[in-house]
Image (tube, rainbow, N blue to C red; front, side, top):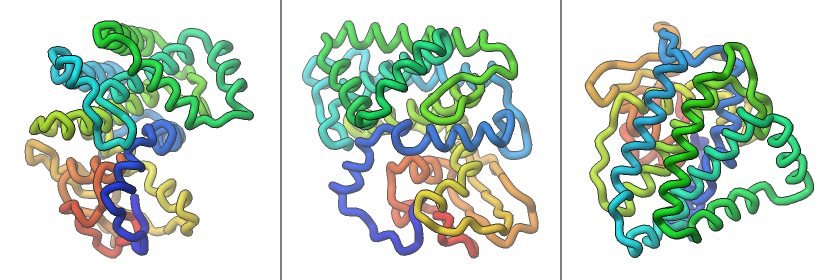
Amino acid sequence: MTSPDSPRPETGSLREWQKRPAEARAENNQARLLENRGRACHGEGVIDLTVVLADLRAEGDELESWVVHLPETGWRTPTPAVGWTVAHQVAHLAWTDERALLSATDPDGFHAEAAALADGDPQQFVDDGAAAGAGLPVAELLSRWRSSRERLATVLAEVPVGAKLPWYGPPMSATSMATARIMETWAHAGDVADTLEIQRKPTARIRHVAHIGVRTRDFAYLVRGLAVPVEQFRIELTAPDGELWVWGPDDAAQRITGSAHDFCRLVTQRVHRDDTDLVPHQATSAL
């Protein structure tokens, strides 16, 4: 989230930010902080891995339905992420799914690959992965992405309870890994939807994205060098079906209200706070 004194970015700078893949910017840190909170909790409830994986599959299937019949020219269309086409967006998701698969099936191999990056540029590693995939024939890229995401869901379902998977930072549970994958898939699918002028209908699946955003409020302060408030806070978001999703105690003075959709767009850096319906109540800096 942006700090109160952050200038509203020009269109170009926002799009340049969108180019930075979520795991290189946010969800690695978000998911690891979420992991410190225990099992994935949405509001006052607890959600199990089966539900998370079903929603992960649904997010991938929705995006695939938009691109599966695109002509070659459609795949090469530039997206809001500077330098990235639709093919880059899908290739990046496939590439990251493959990294998660490596983590779950060959931890030693994952550690070896990560160690090789220690003296390099992690962002370039990510960009190169997307570029390589985007250069494949469309049918091959689509098949690769479909295979990687289906296999990842299957593998994560078999991870023993309590087991931790290595990642680019502290290890995560299968549930946290799947939740992070939902967040990224949803964010990059939004870039594709904008490019193809698809009127995307928000679903209840964005609750996973909102949850990560809420649970990592402290991180938003830390990355900006701001002191983390000690006061408790409350988030009240209107779900796509009109239900109220709530995090935090009833008597918290600091609170944010608004639509879950705008909140999710904000925490995935797809919109500036001034272009949302979010209202801070003694919590301006939290946005």
